[in-house]
Amino acid sequence: GNSVTQMEGPVTLSEEAFLTINCTYTATGYPSLFWYVQYPGEGLQLLLKATKADDKGSNKGFEATYRKETTSFHLEKGSVQVSDSAVYFCALGLWNTDKLIFGTGTRLQVFP
Amino acid sequence: GAVVSQHPSRVICKSGTSVKIECRSLDFQATTMFWYRQFPKQSLMLMATSNEGSKATYEQGVEKDKFLINHASLTLSTLTVTSAHPEDSSFYICSARDGAISYNEQFFGPGTRLTVL
Image 1 (cartoon, rainbow over the protein chains, first blue to last red):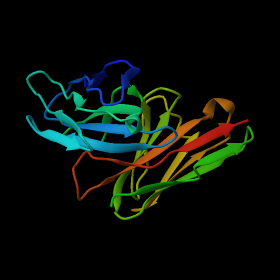
Image 2 (cartoon, rainbow over the protein chains, first blue to last red):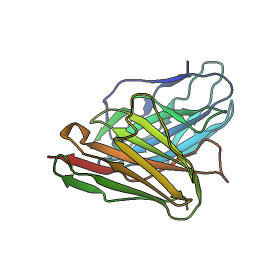
Image 3 (tube, one colour):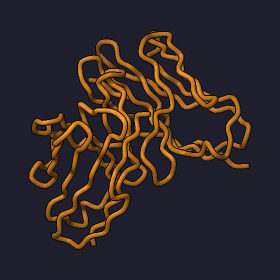
Protein backbone atom coordinates (compact mmCIF):
# COMPACT_ATOMS: atom_id res chain seq x y z
CA GLY A 1 0.00 0.00 0.00
CA ASN A 2 0.88 3.67 0.09
CA SER A 3 2.75 4.90 3.14
CA VAL A 4 5.28 7.37 4.50
CA THR A 5 7.95 6.54 7.03
CA GLN A 6 9.74 9.21 8.98
CA MET A 7 12.54 8.97 11.48
CA GLU A 8 11.37 9.03 15.04
CA GLY A 9 12.08 12.06 17.12
CA PRO A 10 12.71 14.07 18.93
CA VAL A 11 15.70 15.40 17.10
CA THR A 12 17.67 17.66 19.40
CA LEU A 13 20.25 20.03 17.96
CA SER A 14 22.24 23.05 18.93
CA GLU A 15 21.72 26.26 17.02
CA GLU A 16 23.63 26.38 13.69
CA ALA A 17 23.89 22.58 13.51
CA PHE A 18 23.11 20.66 10.32
CA LEU A 19 19.69 19.04 10.14
CA THR A 20 18.55 15.92 8.34
CA ILE A 21 15.12 14.38 8.83
CA ASN A 22 14.71 11.18 6.86
CA CYS A 23 11.58 10.37 4.95
CA THR A 24 10.93 7.39 2.72
CA TYR A 25 7.75 6.44 0.95
CA THR A 26 5.93 3.61 -0.73
CA ALA A 27 3.51 4.54 -3.46
CA THR A 28 2.00 3.42 -6.70
CA GLY A 29 2.16 5.72 -9.65
CA TYR A 30 3.88 9.08 -9.48
CA PRO A 31 3.23 10.82 -6.18
CA SER A 32 3.90 14.40 -5.22
CA LEU A 33 5.90 14.86 -2.03
CA PHE A 34 5.55 17.49 0.64
CA TRP A 35 7.06 18.67 3.88
CA TYR A 36 4.74 20.43 6.29
CA VAL A 37 5.74 22.14 9.53
CA GLN A 38 3.58 22.53 12.62
CA TYR A 39 4.52 25.06 15.27
CA PRO A 40 3.14 24.56 18.79
CA GLY A 41 -0.60 25.04 18.98
CA GLU A 42 -0.96 25.76 15.29
CA GLY A 43 -2.08 24.01 12.12
CA LEU A 44 0.22 22.78 9.41
CA GLN A 45 2.08 25.04 7.02
CA LEU A 46 3.49 23.88 3.72
CA LEU A 47 7.26 24.10 3.92
CA LEU A 48 8.23 22.78 0.50
CA LYS A 49 7.14 20.37 -2.19
CA ALA A 50 8.32 18.41 -5.21
CA THR A 51 6.07 17.01 -7.88
CA LYS A 52 8.38 14.77 -9.90
CA ALA A 53 11.58 12.80 -9.63
CA ASP A 54 14.79 14.82 -9.16
CA ASP A 55 12.85 17.97 -8.28
CA LYS A 56 14.30 19.89 -5.37
CA GLY A 57 11.95 21.78 -3.12
CA SER A 58 13.38 24.60 -1.04
CA ASN A 59 12.13 27.26 1.35
CA LYS A 60 13.52 29.19 4.32
CA GLY A 61 16.86 27.40 4.03
CA PHE A 62 15.26 23.95 4.02
CA GLU A 63 15.72 21.63 1.06
CA ALA A 64 14.50 18.21 -0.01
CA THR A 65 15.11 16.30 -3.23
CA TYR A 66 12.64 13.82 -4.69
CA ARG A 67 14.70 10.65 -5.16
CA LYS A 68 12.73 8.05 -7.01
CA GLU A 69 15.55 5.49 -7.01
CA THR A 70 15.68 5.44 -3.22
CA THR A 71 12.01 6.47 -2.70
CA SER A 72 13.16 9.19 -0.37
CA PHE A 73 12.51 12.85 0.33
CA HIS A 74 14.87 13.75 3.16
CA LEU A 75 14.62 17.22 4.67
CA GLU A 76 17.87 19.15 5.23
CA LYS A 77 18.95 22.50 6.53
CA GLY A 78 22.52 23.67 6.81
CA SER A 79 22.16 25.77 9.96
CA VAL A 80 19.13 25.47 12.20
CA GLN A 81 17.78 28.19 14.43
CA VAL A 82 15.84 28.04 17.68
CA SER A 83 12.81 29.29 15.74
CA ASP A 84 12.90 26.10 13.63
CA SER A 85 11.75 24.10 16.64
CA ALA A 86 8.52 22.45 15.50
CA VAL A 87 7.09 19.17 14.28
CA TYR A 88 7.85 18.29 10.67
CA PHE A 89 5.57 16.06 8.63
CA CYS A 90 6.47 14.35 5.40
CA ALA A 91 3.50 13.61 3.16
CA LEU A 92 2.75 12.15 -0.21
CA GLY A 93 -0.07 12.92 -2.57
CA LEU A 94 -1.20 10.22 -4.95
CA TRP A 95 -1.80 11.05 -8.55
CA ASN A 96 -5.32 9.66 -8.61
CA THR A 97 -6.73 11.05 -5.38
CA ASP A 98 -7.04 14.28 -3.47
CA LYS A 99 -5.78 12.73 -0.27
CA LEU A 100 -2.48 13.25 1.45
CA ILE A 101 -0.80 10.48 3.36
CA PHE A 102 1.22 11.74 6.29
CA GLY A 103 4.15 10.35 8.14
CA THR A 104 4.04 10.29 11.92
CA GLY A 105 5.91 13.56 12.26
CA THR A 106 9.34 14.34 13.69
CA ARG A 107 9.74 16.79 16.51
CA LEU A 108 12.77 19.07 16.19
CA GLN A 109 14.12 20.86 19.23
CA VAL A 110 16.84 23.43 18.72
CA PHE A 111 18.67 24.84 21.72
CA PRO A 112 20.74 28.01 21.79
CA GLY B 1 -2.65 33.89 -0.83
CA ALA B 2 -4.14 30.49 -0.05
CA VAL B 3 -5.26 31.27 3.48
CA VAL B 4 -7.58 28.99 5.39
CA SER B 5 -9.21 30.09 8.63
CA GLN B 6 -10.96 28.13 11.34
CA HIS B 7 -13.37 29.29 13.97
CA PRO B 8 -13.33 28.97 16.87
CA SER B 9 -9.70 28.35 17.74
CA ARG B 10 -10.65 26.88 21.09
CA VAL B 11 -13.92 25.61 22.47
CA ILE B 12 -14.88 24.05 25.77
CA CYS B 13 -18.25 22.41 26.05
CA LYS B 14 -20.21 20.16 28.36
CA SER B 15 -20.72 16.50 27.61
CA GLY B 16 -23.82 15.91 25.51
CA THR B 17 -23.80 19.23 23.71
CA SER B 18 -23.01 19.81 20.04
CA VAL B 19 -20.19 21.94 18.72
CA LYS B 20 -19.81 23.46 15.28
CA ILE B 21 -16.43 24.29 13.78
CA GLU B 22 -16.15 26.45 10.68
CA CYS B 23 -13.47 26.25 8.02
CA ARG B 24 -13.15 28.99 5.42
CA SER B 25 -10.92 29.53 2.43
CA LEU B 26 -10.35 33.26 2.40
CA ASP B 27 -8.84 33.98 -0.98
CA PHE B 28 -9.57 31.00 -3.17
CA GLN B 29 -12.37 28.64 -4.02
CA ALA B 30 -11.96 25.33 -2.30
CA THR B 31 -13.33 22.59 -4.48
CA THR B 32 -12.45 20.06 -1.82
CA MET B 33 -12.05 20.39 1.93
CA PHE B 34 -10.69 17.88 4.37
CA TRP B 35 -11.16 17.38 8.09
CA TYR B 36 -8.45 15.87 10.23
CA ARG B 37 -8.15 14.93 13.85
CA GLN B 38 -4.87 15.08 15.68
CA PHE B 39 -4.18 13.48 19.03
CA PRO B 40 -1.35 14.79 21.24
CA LYS B 41 2.05 14.13 19.71
CA GLN B 42 0.56 12.11 16.88
CA SER B 43 0.05 12.50 13.20
CA LEU B 44 -3.07 13.71 11.48
CA MET B 45 -5.90 11.28 10.98
CA LEU B 46 -8.10 12.06 8.00
CA MET B 47 -11.73 11.97 9.06
CA ALA B 48 -13.54 12.93 5.89
CA THR B 49 -13.34 14.59 2.53
CA SER B 50 -16.02 16.97 1.36
CA ASN B 51 -16.77 18.44 -2.03
CA GLU B 52 -18.94 21.49 -2.40
CA GLY B 53 -22.59 20.62 -2.81
CA SER B 54 -22.25 16.90 -2.19
CA LYS B 55 -22.14 14.55 0.76
CA ALA B 56 -18.89 14.06 2.58
CA THR B 57 -16.90 10.88 2.19
CA TYR B 58 -15.92 9.50 5.58
CA GLU B 59 -12.87 7.40 6.33
CA GLN B 60 -13.32 3.98 7.74
CA GLY B 61 -14.13 4.02 11.43
CA VAL B 62 -15.37 7.61 11.51
CA GLU B 63 -19.01 7.91 12.60
CA LYS B 64 -20.85 10.04 10.08
CA ASP B 65 -23.75 10.63 12.44
CA LYS B 66 -21.36 11.81 15.10
CA PHE B 67 -19.28 14.12 12.92
CA LEU B 68 -21.58 15.98 10.58
CA ILE B 69 -19.88 17.74 7.70
CA ASN B 70 -21.47 20.32 5.48
CA HIS B 71 -19.75 21.96 2.51
CA ALA B 72 -22.39 24.42 1.45
CA SER B 73 -20.23 26.75 -0.60
CA LEU B 74 -16.84 26.90 -2.27
CA THR B 75 -15.42 28.81 0.67
CA LEU B 76 -17.06 27.25 3.72
CA SER B 77 -17.19 23.82 5.30
CA THR B 78 -18.47 23.04 8.78
CA LEU B 79 -17.85 20.14 11.12
CA THR B 80 -20.42 19.55 13.83
CA VAL B 81 -19.51 17.22 16.66
CA THR B 82 -22.87 15.99 17.90
CA SER B 83 -23.51 14.91 21.48
CA ALA B 84 -19.87 15.44 22.32
CA HIS B 85 -18.17 13.32 24.95
CA PRO B 86 -14.78 13.64 26.63
CA GLU B 87 -13.24 11.16 24.21
CA ASP B 88 -14.03 13.60 21.39
CA SER B 89 -11.61 16.09 22.90
CA SER B 90 -8.93 16.65 20.32
CA PHE B 91 -7.34 19.09 17.90
CA TYR B 92 -9.40 19.34 14.73
CA ILE B 93 -7.74 20.68 11.61
CA CYS B 94 -9.30 21.45 8.27
CA SER B 95 -7.58 21.87 4.95
CA ALA B 96 -8.67 22.98 1.53
CA ARG B 97 -7.58 22.25 -1.97
CA ASP B 98 -7.52 24.90 -4.65
CA GLY B 99 -8.34 23.14 -7.87
CA ALA B 100 -6.45 25.80 -9.80
CA ILE B 101 -3.13 24.77 -8.23
CA SER B 102 -1.39 21.45 -7.69
CA TYR B 103 -3.68 18.49 -7.64
CA ASN B 104 -2.64 17.30 -4.20
CA GLU B 105 -1.55 20.43 -2.40
CA GLN B 106 -3.67 21.28 0.61
CA PHE B 107 -3.74 24.48 2.62
CA PHE B 108 -4.36 24.01 6.31
CA GLY B 109 -6.29 25.98 8.84
CA PRO B 110 -4.80 26.81 12.23
CA GLY B 111 -6.84 24.16 14.01
CA THR B 112 -9.53 24.08 16.68
CA ARG B 113 -8.89 22.62 20.08
CA LEU B 114 -12.02 21.01 21.45
CA THR B 115 -12.27 20.15 25.13
CA VAL B 116 -15.35 18.28 26.30
CA LEU B 117 -15.90 18.31 30.04
